[in-house]
Image 1: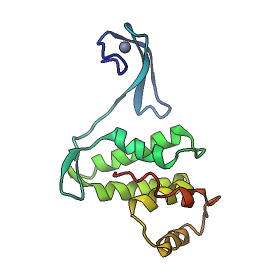
Image 2 (image 1 turned 90 degrees about the vertical axis):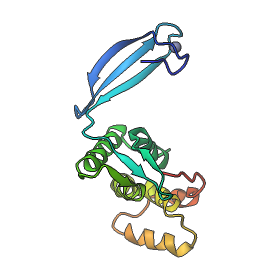
Image 3 (image 1 turned 180 degrees about the horizontal axis):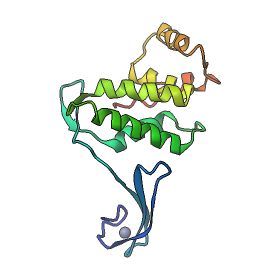
Image 4 (image 1 turned 60 degrees about the horizontal axis):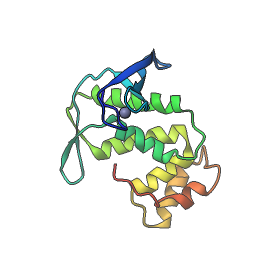
Length: 168
Ligand SMILES: [Zn+2]
């Protein structure tokens, strides 16, 4: 495994153990050249997935990108990383078991929104506002209505929304 810091191929595994739900093996690695440390994960991949973007462009499905969508939306929110990991695993399994090799990015976006909704309502509003490109206040109101059972804890998510527009 190439060192992400210096590019050397001389890296060693220092520690290897399953994640909490045993869906992956986490390996701590150290670079023999620059002593940089990093972590890799070994996971089951049931099938190769392709994401079809809104533009029609096709790109390989990237689990890390999916995880980053959650991390971005959950930034500064108090959310257990293990729950996020399990959520991402669940979405990947769901996508892999759909029986389709090509999946629309919009569909993945919807799954992320559903996932965020159950993890953290503020993060959900934050992500949804960017993802759905809200332009009008009443779109926010409609979203807040959806959250009536579990209203956001503060206004921060709404205020912050839209600043870090990410193309999923
Ligand atoms: Zn290195």
